[in-house]
Image 1 (cartoon, rainbow over the protein chains, first blue to last red):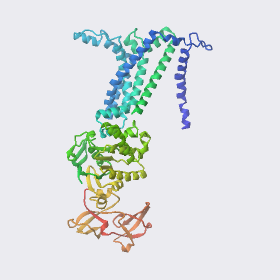
Image 2 (image 1 turned 90 degrees about the horizontal axis):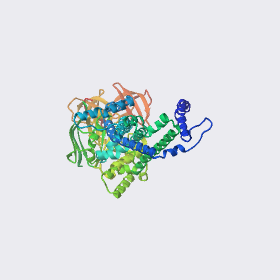
Image 3 (image 1 turned 60 degrees about the vertical axis):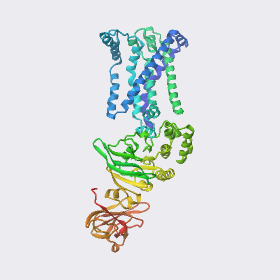
Image 4 (image 1 turned 180 degrees about the vertical axis):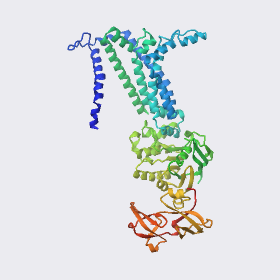
Length: 275
Length: 346
């Protein structure tokens, strides 16, 4: 094994250059103020103090809200789909999983623009509604359009890990549960669902992470007034140019995500112990 | 003994392949019945139909006289011990065993008493809180047996449960399963491809091949009186020889006439003659009814396996006496040693 270790060197270097150094830089930016020079750094907590402002707090709360809603919808829609797929013959499963991933082959921007056309006031749905004489519904630039966009974009990331854990489950466990007197519902509740928890947690964490930090979807489907954490960070870096404040927000987001993941993990453990 | 399960003309097709071709079998109360056969003979399918995991394509499954073909597995009074145990990995030993009782909403105190007693029976009293995934194969096996038996099924189905254990542990578990079966006094239906396992544990052995039953009988009957070439070849090692039944108690093979104990065949009927390797005696050439030369000697532990080549064929013989290769020898047989069977397509 030992001489294989050298083979991991390029990966290690890659990790250091593209993950570790940028991370350190962001944290460094977050704790310093403008006017840094190579040798002199002005440490300060001012960036973090700045976040304690109702406007920014509201952005955080809204981001979390929409992130949670998106994750829940993805779970409610994705689990049954993953379950149905996992009951099929293997060849059919492969095909269906391929179909689930098909949308991700097309650039996310294009897909989002497509939604804009569908949801717009003079878009496809409203055109259809007015032709039926039902009047117009405003869908663009609302929570609805943003959540819809995120759900459609992130759904595969919920389905695939759940499907993986369901399809690799030992079928004899399901037979064993039924053999011991559990009907279909009890079998699902006490065995199948419990054993798919690792997939559920992976899916939930992945979708939540992407939903909470996304900025293109809220920008396009939510409009200029619609600000989530991702948009806030983007504007600090791109248009306002306050890299220090942007870094502070990023750091806080990263810490919140770490805490959320930690909670998910411990929930899984507790549930396992409680049973 | 009273019948508990009756299989009547049971058939099963997978696609256009017929894996069960009309199984008729009665399983009695308190019986240790073994379905024995090579892989693909339909023994596991038969078991799965009794458990309710497969629906028969034709025929009936009667349980206490009632057809249960359409009853789902969770409503049947049978429990299964699976080939690879199928323990729930997210539960500890206690919860695995308590699963069936838990489903039936049995009172908590009664669950505890029953589970403890069952773990005691399989020798795992101190393992209640262990993680099942960390147990050894033998221990997992015991949990699986306890999990099934705690529900007090009328019939316990065991699908090659000892296949994954090493030889020594397998012997121990064979003994223990038999002991448990006697202790709780219910019917065991055991599936295996291991003929020794079948002979050791069973009251009744059902030999199957290619979706049909070849013979049903006690281990001694199956071994000593195989009904056809397949059974003779599958159970133990045999020399199976073409012969002619001249008249009652007289059979000719390899141009020599032998006395035997079989009767009831038509005059000069072609038959299969089975000679068990341990029944053939090696004597001096002039004392034997057949003459040959020792071709090989293999030490097998308890006995030697000696191959003697005569003018007609090679005989496989098990004996505790050593014989050097190339020695000319004679072979003798007593009437008891010769088993005559009707010719079958095998």
